[in-house]
Length: 186
Image (cartoon, rainbow, N blue to C red; front, side):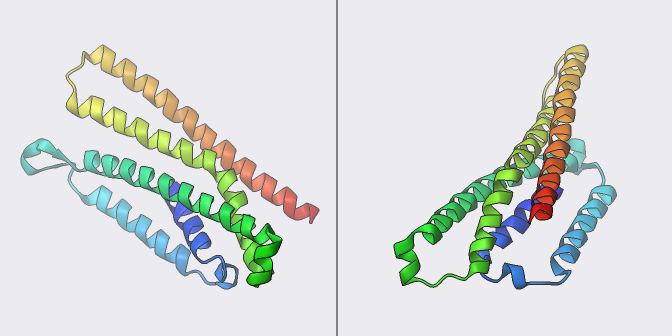
């Protein structure tokens, strides 16, 4: 879920690059923590099997999460390309004469590009995790494989899932450490 929140936060930072740095307050955090709590409550209180024992709520949520993750990556890619294009316009001397840019806007764009490059591996690992969950759900719910083969496939998929979780942790820690080192040098 945190991957989704980071993508939403970076999207807001990109769309509001002019005034994003000046916006303060806990509203973004409160809003997304509330959404996470509501989703957890719904997930824990909704019966697993609904409508004639053929509809599984968790299967639906897993498929929706994959769709959302794919859309988020597409949006994130478009925003990243847009940020790079706008930043190149900042560096164009002729364009700077026709439009007065604020230094904070340029800094925010540079920060969006930097964090986008740093977080891309995290988002890809996140997508692979959701894809692995979908494969497990599909194998478990929709196929009639031999139990030994099914268990072997699920074990292999969980191994990939675990490696991706480690990759997420490493990329996030690396991102935070690099950010911290850069701030100390400045």
